[in-house]
Length: 273
Image (tube, rainbow, N blue to C red; front, side, top):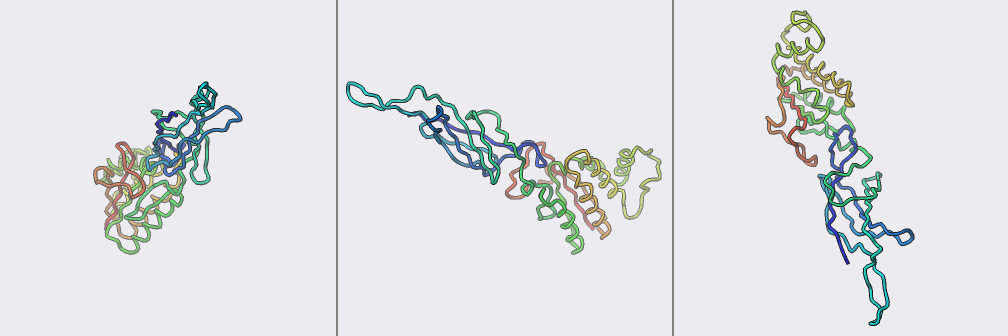
């Protein structure tokens, strides 16, 4: 009886984690759909890997029938049973049936639920991971490090949290940052706003205003959380602010969160005394 090669990839519906987030660890069942009343045949089951992929070889999918021949009864493949597949996907409390399912399709299958908030990586503060379930922990981690006098606080933002910070890469000095802020506010270059000062508040103000550009996106929380965290650190003596990208510094994703791909948003903000 025939078997087939089965392969595919699952991704989450677009959400805070992005538009191509793999569905990892989901339980997969593939069925051959039979005629009404005959029952569908489970021909393969397994789980998706960290990249949302699954693959394997099915059990025999074609039904058989018994016929009488001059030589006695024989079992033959049922020619009326054509291959038609469906896939059941379950991840925690979420489940969906995809029918028909096309094995080995070149495009991923999109499930109708977003990546769970507790698995959406938004930032890392030194070695502390911040997820979409508790984004306010970014502020708490910065506060704890600043109050303990850590020599450096590195804030790494990912995805939608990193996107609005990219303009800071070209404003890594006080004059450039001030010019960027004035431009965002629609003010002339000779404005009295954000005049240079000993504490170099220009970079801090720049951070806050760049963060505010995210209001038009889903990550509104970054406005208050990241900006206030940086202001607090500066108040506690962290006056040196450096910006960079993950690729330039060789920063990688924490264990369990996959790997950075070319074009992924990843922004590094270093605060030093």
